[in-house]
Amino acid sequence: MIDVNYKIIRQRLEKEHKRMAEQLQHIRDNRSSEERREGSPFGKREEEASETADLENMVAQEQRVMEEMVDIESALKKFDLGTFGKCEKCGRQIELARLEAMPTAKLCMNDAQKNAR
Ligand SMILES: [Zn+2]
Image (tube, rainbow, N blue to C red):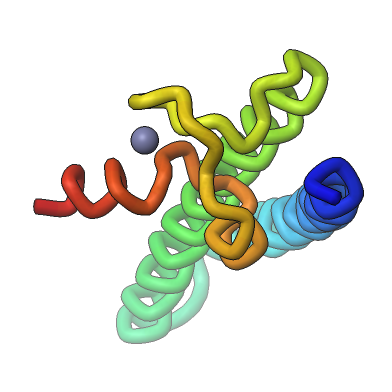
């Protein structure tokens, strides 16, 4: 039963990873065109300011996507190691409902709550 569910979760993670990679590519494409524009000596000051904010926004967004990808990759690696779904703290099985809601969860409900405090 659990194996079947894990297989579905794995597929979801793989799909999500692909989506993230595409999103990252998209952000990077946008960023390089933005950077080219910023290098231009023309344009008004106000516009420059808002473009810098855009660029900062993109960098932050890129950072977020990359972090998420790292999480997904480490979760996928656990499938190969056979440790997926195990709490990194107590080694017990993470609740399936929790994994379904958050496939990259590293801790069981109990330890996550302890950690949050
Ligand atoms: Zn635990």
